[in-house]
Length: 444
Ligand code: 9WN
Image (cartoon, rainbow, N blue to C red):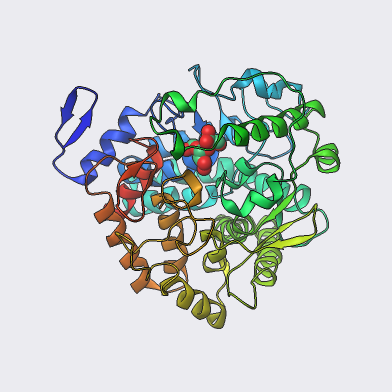
């Protein structure tokens, strides 16, 4: 049973509820990330959405991913937002002015930054579901793969070259939003060096949709977010000029692990259709970023760290990103150490947790805030991603435990954006598309 304004909706099952959310957020060619808070297409949300949609309809999942590509920039970047016609989100197209960028696509309004490259996982899911079902679904999936393989390849090649020009094996980001974990305390030290100057005024829209404002970033954080956008916009989103002038430069370990893992997945897909040259390049990208992620592991804590480029320092905050190696490293010793930490008292074994699920920040960290956005709450989509990494390398028992715990957490059917780790209460947006999508994938 779910409360929606004055209407009460009865679901026969959690899977039906998840399907209902995806259908109600469907605007035809795109699924909005959330009905009110996020009325547009977000890059990594859309990939998770396609993972869920593929369980319902291969052609609809294909449409979602084709829409993602319709916003791709000419240099290969997939922008973090592709705007629908809906108003009411800050920062909208008039703040980004992506049309000022020489690589921006024509006729599609987008943001000017990117998000983690999880898309290959969605392509693999679509192709997998298509091949399994056969018939028209198989044809649609195969056609989609051949049509779009180069575009996905270009996306990975852009990240590997432009965002890691000196081959550290780490993706450099220029806005916390690029990490997808916007105000994670892992960025606090880097954001302390972002001091907004005079700028165009703005009005936040997110606070109209989330009653308890402490569940969202602060006003000061928002002024820093807007400041960084304005900095990039002022140089026409030119990659080199941005790198030389932006106030936020971090090598993101989670994004790097995702690039390594997704490049292997894309390579496998390429090999299956005879794109051997690109597949070999993708394997090399994967190798380089896996090595970068491995080097980022702290010998003291066993967690992987980000690197702040401006201060030249590693970032030690204990966040879920520390488990990035579980997504891309096969090495048994690395995995076993990470699994010991993950199942220990600072994470899944913490005695106050309502469910044994990874929190965005360790509950034992001084930076932990149990209801504030990426500073503590449990995000089901990250649980899914971690579970994917566990299964990929044979750690099935823990993956299954995470799936079951997460489904219990989601049992009320509100498909919240994030959850209070201690009480299990839903937080942020309700009917969040990617939460419904991962639930659907877990259930089918
Ligand atoms: C800014 C859509 C997005 C997710 C991000 C999440 C949140 C946006 C916001 O919502 O970020 O990109 O306005 O807060 O942090 O991971 O993609 O669900």
